Image (cartoon, rainbow, N blue to C red):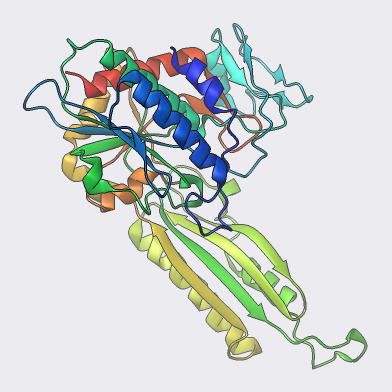
Length: 400
Protein backbone atom coordinates (compact mmCIF):
# COMPACT_ATOMS: atom_id res chain seq x y z
CA UNK A 1 0.00 0.00 0.00
CA UNK A 2 1.29 3.47 -0.85
CA UNK A 3 1.54 6.17 1.79
CA UNK A 4 -1.22 8.33 0.32
CA UNK A 5 -3.66 5.42 0.43
CA UNK A 6 -3.07 5.00 4.15
CA UNK A 7 -3.26 8.74 4.60
CA UNK A 8 -6.68 8.94 2.96
CA UNK A 9 -7.94 6.41 5.52
CA UNK A 10 -6.36 8.05 8.56
CA UNK A 11 -7.77 11.52 7.84
CA UNK A 12 -11.30 10.16 8.20
CA UNK A 13 -10.68 9.97 11.96
CA UNK A 14 -11.57 13.32 13.56
CA UNK A 15 -8.72 13.58 16.05
CA UNK A 16 -8.41 17.25 17.00
CA UNK A 17 -6.93 17.49 20.48
CA UNK A 18 -8.52 19.72 23.14
CA UNK A 19 -6.39 21.66 25.62
CA UNK A 20 -9.43 22.22 27.86
CA UNK A 21 -9.44 18.54 28.78
CA UNK A 22 -7.07 17.13 31.41
CA UNK A 23 -7.28 13.49 30.32
CA UNK A 24 -4.82 11.78 27.98
CA UNK A 25 -5.57 11.53 25.18
CA UNK A 26 -7.60 14.69 25.39
CA UNK A 27 -10.20 13.46 22.86
CA UNK A 28 -11.60 9.94 22.46
CA UNK A 29 -11.11 9.57 18.71
CA UNK A 30 -7.35 9.67 19.17
CA UNK A 31 -7.62 6.39 21.03
CA UNK A 32 -9.85 5.00 18.27
CA UNK A 33 -7.17 5.81 15.69
CA UNK A 34 -4.50 4.38 18.00
CA UNK A 35 -6.35 1.06 18.17
CA UNK A 36 -6.70 0.99 14.38
CA UNK A 37 -2.97 1.63 13.97
CA UNK A 38 -2.08 -1.17 16.37
CA UNK A 39 -4.32 -3.57 14.46
CA UNK A 40 -2.66 -2.54 11.20
CA UNK A 41 0.84 -2.87 12.67
CA UNK A 42 0.09 -6.37 13.92
CA UNK A 43 -1.12 -7.23 10.44
CA UNK A 44 2.18 -6.05 8.99
CA UNK A 45 4.11 -8.29 11.37
CA UNK A 46 5.04 -5.76 14.04
CA UNK A 47 4.28 -8.26 16.75
CA UNK A 48 4.84 -6.07 19.81
CA UNK A 49 2.51 -3.29 18.59
CA UNK A 50 0.47 -1.92 21.47
CA UNK A 51 -1.34 1.13 22.79
CA UNK A 52 -0.70 2.08 26.41
CA UNK A 53 -3.13 3.43 28.98
CA UNK A 54 -2.42 7.01 27.86
CA UNK A 55 -3.12 6.40 24.17
CA UNK A 56 0.51 6.21 22.99
CA UNK A 57 1.21 3.64 20.28
CA UNK A 58 4.50 1.70 20.32
CA UNK A 59 5.98 -1.08 18.24
CA UNK A 60 9.32 -2.25 16.90
CA UNK A 61 11.01 -4.24 14.17
CA UNK A 62 13.91 -6.34 15.52
CA UNK A 63 17.42 -5.73 14.22
CA UNK A 64 18.59 -8.08 11.47
CA UNK A 65 22.26 -7.05 11.67
CA UNK A 66 24.70 -6.49 14.51
CA UNK A 67 26.36 -3.22 15.43
CA UNK A 68 23.71 -0.91 13.97
CA UNK A 69 21.92 1.75 16.04
CA UNK A 70 18.35 1.47 17.26
CA UNK A 71 16.51 4.27 15.44
CA UNK A 72 13.11 5.66 16.30
CA UNK A 73 10.47 7.17 14.04
CA UNK A 74 7.73 9.24 15.70
CA UNK A 75 4.61 11.04 14.46
CA UNK A 76 1.52 12.38 16.20
CA UNK A 77 -2.06 11.25 15.74
CA UNK A 78 -3.90 14.42 16.72
CA UNK A 79 -4.60 17.42 14.53
CA UNK A 80 -5.03 21.09 15.34
CA UNK A 81 -8.41 22.52 16.29
CA UNK A 82 -7.53 25.82 14.58
CA UNK A 83 -9.92 24.81 11.78
CA UNK A 84 -12.67 22.18 11.65
CA UNK A 85 -11.30 18.66 11.13
CA UNK A 86 -14.42 16.91 9.90
CA UNK A 87 -16.37 15.67 8.19
CA UNK A 88 -13.39 15.18 5.90
CA UNK A 89 -13.96 15.44 2.15
CA UNK A 90 -10.55 15.23 0.54
CA UNK A 91 -9.92 14.91 -3.17
CA UNK A 92 -6.91 14.33 -5.40
CA UNK A 93 -6.23 16.93 -8.07
CA UNK A 94 -4.59 15.11 -10.96
CA UNK A 95 -1.63 16.81 -12.66
CA UNK A 96 -1.96 20.06 -10.69
CA UNK A 97 -1.15 22.96 -13.02
CA UNK A 98 0.65 25.09 -10.42
CA UNK A 99 -1.87 27.92 -10.49
CA UNK A 100 -4.80 29.07 -8.32
CA UNK A 101 -7.01 26.13 -7.39
CA UNK A 102 -10.67 26.67 -6.50
CA UNK A 103 -11.83 24.40 -3.70
CA UNK A 104 -15.35 23.01 -3.49
CA UNK A 105 -16.57 25.76 -1.16
CA UNK A 106 -15.33 28.50 -3.48
CA UNK A 107 -12.16 29.35 -1.55
CA UNK A 108 -9.01 29.59 -3.66
CA UNK A 109 -5.73 27.85 -2.89
CA UNK A 110 -3.52 30.50 -4.44
CA UNK A 111 0.28 30.06 -4.83
CA UNK A 112 0.58 33.84 -4.54
CA UNK A 113 -0.50 33.42 -0.91
CA UNK A 114 0.87 29.91 -0.35
CA UNK A 115 4.02 29.80 -2.52
CA UNK A 116 5.10 26.27 -1.55
CA UNK A 117 2.13 24.90 -3.48
CA UNK A 118 3.69 25.99 -6.78
CA UNK A 119 6.44 23.42 -6.21
CA UNK A 120 3.94 20.60 -6.65
CA UNK A 121 3.12 21.49 -10.25
CA UNK A 122 2.54 18.35 -12.30
CA UNK A 123 1.93 16.20 -9.23
CA UNK A 124 -1.21 14.68 -7.74
CA UNK A 125 -2.24 17.15 -5.04
CA UNK A 126 -4.45 16.13 -2.11
CA UNK A 127 -6.68 18.99 -0.92
CA UNK A 128 -9.83 19.40 1.14
CA UNK A 129 -13.17 20.82 0.05
CA UNK A 130 -12.21 24.07 1.80
CA UNK A 131 -14.38 23.46 4.85
CA UNK A 132 -11.87 21.57 7.01
CA UNK A 133 -8.17 21.15 7.46
CA UNK A 134 -6.63 18.08 5.83
CA UNK A 135 -4.73 16.45 8.67
CA UNK A 136 -1.37 16.17 6.92
CA UNK A 137 -0.04 17.50 10.22
CA UNK A 138 0.65 14.81 11.14
CA UNK A 139 -1.23 11.89 9.63
CA UNK A 140 1.03 12.20 6.59
CA UNK A 141 3.91 11.39 8.93
CA UNK A 142 2.03 8.43 10.39
CA UNK A 143 1.27 7.09 6.90
CA UNK A 144 4.86 7.49 5.70
CA UNK A 145 6.30 5.70 8.73
CA UNK A 146 3.82 2.85 8.39
CA UNK A 147 4.53 2.46 4.68
CA UNK A 148 8.30 2.53 5.22
CA UNK A 149 7.94 -0.22 7.82
CA UNK A 150 5.85 -2.30 5.42
CA UNK A 151 8.56 -2.00 2.76
CA UNK A 152 11.34 -2.89 5.17
CA UNK A 153 9.48 -5.95 6.43
CA UNK A 154 8.99 -7.05 2.82
CA UNK A 155 12.76 -6.86 2.18
CA UNK A 156 14.61 -8.86 4.86
CA UNK A 157 17.82 -8.42 2.87
CA UNK A 158 17.89 -4.72 3.84
CA UNK A 159 20.14 -4.47 6.90
CA UNK A 160 19.03 -2.40 9.85
CA UNK A 161 19.25 -2.11 13.60
CA UNK A 162 16.18 -2.14 15.82
CA UNK A 163 13.46 0.10 14.41
CA UNK A 164 11.34 1.77 17.07
CA UNK A 165 7.93 3.19 16.15
CA UNK A 166 5.94 5.69 18.21
CA UNK A 167 2.70 7.54 17.57
CA UNK A 168 1.76 10.16 20.14
CA UNK A 169 -1.48 11.90 21.15
CA UNK A 170 -1.97 15.57 21.99
CA UNK A 171 1.11 17.02 20.29
CA UNK A 172 -0.86 19.99 19.02
CA UNK A 173 -1.63 21.09 22.57
CA UNK A 174 1.97 20.66 23.72
CA UNK A 175 1.52 17.39 25.61
CA UNK A 176 2.80 14.84 23.11
CA UNK A 177 5.96 14.08 25.07
CA UNK A 178 4.37 14.26 28.52
CA UNK A 179 3.93 10.53 28.95
CA UNK A 180 6.26 9.21 26.27
CA UNK A 181 8.16 6.17 27.54
CA UNK A 182 11.68 7.03 26.38
CA UNK A 183 13.31 4.08 28.14
CA UNK A 184 10.73 1.57 26.94
CA UNK A 185 10.87 3.01 23.42
CA UNK A 186 14.41 1.68 23.21
CA UNK A 187 15.92 3.96 20.56
CA UNK A 188 19.44 5.41 20.58
CA UNK A 189 18.08 8.43 18.72
CA UNK A 190 14.92 9.22 16.80
CA UNK A 191 13.26 11.50 14.28
CA UNK A 192 9.85 13.09 14.30
CA UNK A 193 8.26 13.00 10.84
CA UNK A 194 6.27 16.17 11.32
CA UNK A 195 7.55 18.80 8.95
CA UNK A 196 6.78 20.59 5.74
CA UNK A 197 8.09 20.55 2.20
CA UNK A 198 10.57 18.05 0.80
CA UNK A 199 14.12 18.59 2.04
CA UNK A 200 13.22 20.12 5.38
CA UNK A 201 15.57 19.02 8.14
CA UNK A 202 15.02 20.72 11.47
CA UNK A 203 17.11 20.64 14.60
CA UNK A 204 16.35 24.16 15.79
CA UNK A 205 13.01 25.25 17.20
CA UNK A 206 11.56 28.01 19.32
CA UNK A 207 12.01 28.24 23.02
CA UNK A 208 8.38 28.44 24.07
CA UNK A 209 6.27 29.65 26.97
CA UNK A 210 2.63 30.41 27.61
CA UNK A 211 1.62 33.64 29.29
CA UNK A 212 -1.64 34.34 31.09
CA UNK A 213 -2.48 37.89 32.12
CA UNK A 214 -5.40 38.42 34.52
CA UNK A 215 -6.58 41.95 35.27
CA UNK A 216 -8.73 42.65 38.33
CA UNK A 217 -10.96 45.70 38.05
CA UNK A 218 -13.77 47.37 39.90
CA UNK A 219 -17.23 47.57 38.39
CA UNK A 220 -19.31 50.63 39.16
CA UNK A 221 -22.45 51.85 37.42
CA UNK A 222 -21.22 54.02 34.54
CA UNK A 223 -23.48 56.85 35.65
CA UNK A 224 -21.47 57.25 38.85
CA UNK A 225 -18.15 55.74 37.78
CA UNK A 226 -15.91 58.83 37.88
CA UNK A 227 -12.79 58.16 39.99
CA UNK A 228 -14.31 54.86 41.10
CA UNK A 229 -14.44 52.41 38.18
CA UNK A 230 -11.33 50.41 37.27
CA UNK A 231 -12.12 48.88 33.88
CA UNK A 232 -10.25 45.57 33.69
CA UNK A 233 -10.84 45.20 29.95
CA UNK A 234 -9.28 48.58 29.21
CA UNK A 235 -6.25 47.81 31.36
CA UNK A 236 -5.88 44.51 29.50
CA UNK A 237 -5.83 46.51 26.27
CA UNK A 238 -3.08 48.69 27.76
CA UNK A 239 -1.05 45.60 28.55
CA UNK A 240 -1.36 44.42 24.93
CA UNK A 241 -0.47 47.87 23.60
CA UNK A 242 2.74 47.97 25.67
CA UNK A 243 4.13 44.94 23.85
CA UNK A 244 6.04 45.83 20.64
CA UNK A 245 3.57 45.64 17.73
CA UNK A 246 6.29 44.60 15.25
CA UNK A 247 6.99 41.48 17.32
CA UNK A 248 3.85 39.60 16.43
CA UNK A 249 3.69 36.45 14.26
CA UNK A 250 2.28 38.33 11.29
CA UNK A 251 5.39 40.54 11.19
CA UNK A 252 8.14 37.99 11.86
CA UNK A 253 9.98 35.18 10.09
CA UNK A 254 13.11 33.01 10.32
CA UNK A 255 14.78 33.38 13.68
CA UNK A 256 12.63 36.33 14.78
CA UNK A 257 10.64 35.72 17.94
CA UNK A 258 7.23 37.03 18.87
CA UNK A 259 4.43 37.58 21.37
CA UNK A 260 1.15 36.12 20.12
CA UNK A 261 -2.21 36.97 21.65
CA UNK A 262 -4.28 33.80 21.22
CA UNK A 263 -7.40 34.65 23.18
CA UNK A 264 -8.91 37.47 25.21
CA UNK A 265 -12.02 37.86 27.31
CA UNK A 266 -13.21 40.33 29.86
CA UNK A 267 -15.63 42.64 31.61
CA UNK A 268 -15.13 45.72 33.76
CA UNK A 269 -14.59 43.41 36.75
CA UNK A 270 -12.06 40.99 35.28
CA UNK A 271 -10.24 40.43 32.01
CA UNK A 272 -7.77 37.83 30.77
CA UNK A 273 -5.26 37.66 27.94
CA UNK A 274 -3.69 34.40 26.78
CA UNK A 275 -0.35 34.56 24.98
CA UNK A 276 2.32 32.32 23.58
CA UNK A 277 5.88 33.62 23.78
CA UNK A 278 8.51 32.39 21.30
CA UNK A 279 12.19 32.96 20.50
CA UNK A 280 14.99 30.78 19.13
CA UNK A 281 17.62 32.55 21.23
CA UNK A 282 17.50 31.55 24.91
CA UNK A 283 18.71 34.94 26.18
CA UNK A 284 16.08 36.83 24.17
CA UNK A 285 13.48 34.28 25.27
CA UNK A 286 14.20 35.00 28.92
CA UNK A 287 14.08 38.73 28.19
CA UNK A 288 10.62 38.35 26.64
CA UNK A 289 9.33 36.67 29.78
CA UNK A 290 10.84 39.43 31.90
CA UNK A 291 9.10 41.99 29.69
CA UNK A 292 5.75 40.48 30.70
CA UNK A 293 6.64 40.93 34.37
CA UNK A 294 7.90 44.48 33.78
CA UNK A 295 4.65 45.55 32.10
CA UNK A 296 2.63 44.04 34.94
CA UNK A 297 4.78 45.91 37.47
CA UNK A 298 4.26 49.18 35.60
CA UNK A 299 0.47 48.75 35.46
CA UNK A 300 0.31 47.73 39.12
CA UNK A 301 2.23 50.87 39.94
CA UNK A 302 -0.30 52.89 38.02
CA UNK A 303 -3.54 51.22 39.14
CA UNK A 304 -2.62 49.62 42.42
CA UNK A 305 -0.90 46.47 43.65
CA UNK A 306 -2.63 43.26 42.58
CA UNK A 307 -4.43 44.79 39.62
CA UNK A 308 -2.47 42.72 37.10
CA UNK A 309 -1.35 39.12 37.67
CA UNK A 310 0.98 37.44 35.22
CA UNK A 311 1.67 33.71 35.02
CA UNK A 312 4.36 32.62 32.54
CA UNK A 313 5.00 28.89 32.12
CA UNK A 314 7.75 27.37 29.99
CA UNK A 315 6.56 24.82 27.40
CA UNK A 316 9.71 23.57 25.64
CA UNK A 317 13.19 24.67 24.63
CA UNK A 318 15.32 24.82 21.49
CA UNK A 319 16.48 21.27 20.77
CA UNK A 320 19.65 22.52 19.08
CA UNK A 321 21.58 22.60 22.34
CA UNK A 322 20.93 18.87 22.72
CA UNK A 323 21.12 17.71 19.10
CA UNK A 324 24.28 19.55 18.08
CA UNK A 325 26.24 17.08 20.21
CA UNK A 326 25.03 14.33 17.83
CA UNK A 327 25.48 15.80 14.36
CA UNK A 328 26.01 12.34 12.91
CA UNK A 329 22.24 11.85 13.09
CA UNK A 330 21.82 14.98 10.97
CA UNK A 331 24.33 13.66 8.42
CA UNK A 332 22.31 10.45 8.20
CA UNK A 333 19.26 12.41 7.05
CA UNK A 334 21.27 14.53 4.61
CA UNK A 335 22.58 11.38 2.93
CA UNK A 336 19.09 9.87 2.81
CA UNK A 337 17.68 12.98 1.16
CA UNK A 338 20.47 13.15 -1.40
CA UNK A 339 20.12 9.47 -2.27
CA UNK A 340 16.42 10.14 -2.91
CA UNK A 341 17.29 13.04 -5.22
CA UNK A 342 16.26 15.74 -2.73
CA UNK A 343 18.47 18.63 -1.63
CA UNK A 344 18.43 18.84 2.19
CA UNK A 345 17.52 22.21 3.64
CA UNK A 346 18.14 23.28 7.22
CA UNK A 347 15.24 25.39 8.44
CA UNK A 348 14.56 26.63 11.97
CA UNK A 349 11.13 25.46 13.11
CA UNK A 350 8.87 28.37 13.91
CA UNK A 351 7.07 26.17 16.38
CA UNK A 352 7.88 22.96 18.20
CA UNK A 353 7.64 19.21 17.87
CA UNK A 354 7.53 16.30 20.27
CA UNK A 355 11.20 15.94 19.42
CA UNK A 356 12.07 19.23 21.10
CA UNK A 357 11.05 17.92 24.50
CA UNK A 358 12.19 14.37 23.83
CA UNK A 359 15.67 15.71 23.08
CA UNK A 360 15.77 17.14 26.60
CA UNK A 361 14.47 13.81 27.95
CA UNK A 362 17.57 12.01 26.69
CA UNK A 363 16.40 11.03 23.18
CA UNK A 364 18.04 13.22 20.51
CA UNK A 365 15.19 13.78 18.08
CA UNK A 366 15.41 16.19 15.11
CA UNK A 367 12.56 16.57 12.66
CA UNK A 368 12.15 15.69 8.97
CA UNK A 369 9.55 16.61 6.36
CA UNK A 370 6.27 14.96 5.49
CA UNK A 371 5.74 16.93 2.27
CA UNK A 372 2.69 18.71 3.66
CA UNK A 373 1.93 22.42 3.37
CA UNK A 374 -0.26 25.14 4.90
CA UNK A 375 -0.82 23.30 8.17
CA UNK A 376 -3.62 24.22 10.59
CA UNK A 377 -5.71 25.71 7.80
CA UNK A 378 -8.41 24.83 5.31
CA UNK A 379 -5.75 25.24 2.59
CA UNK A 380 -3.66 22.37 3.90
CA UNK A 381 -2.43 20.01 1.18
CA UNK A 382 0.16 17.37 0.30
CA UNK A 383 1.31 15.79 -2.95
CA UNK A 384 1.03 12.04 -3.47
CA UNK A 385 4.49 11.89 -5.03
CA UNK A 386 6.08 13.81 -2.15
CA UNK A 387 4.70 11.28 0.31
CA UNK A 388 6.26 8.51 -1.78
CA UNK A 389 9.62 10.27 -1.69
CA UNK A 390 9.47 10.77 2.07
CA UNK A 391 8.65 7.09 2.53
CA UNK A 392 11.85 6.25 0.67
CA UNK A 393 13.83 8.80 2.72
CA UNK A 394 12.65 7.10 5.91
CA UNK A 395 13.69 3.70 4.53
CA UNK A 396 17.13 5.06 3.67
CA UNK A 397 17.53 6.55 7.16
CA UNK A 398 16.66 3.25 8.78
CA UNK A 399 18.51 0.80 6.53
CA UNK A 400 22.19 0.56 5.69
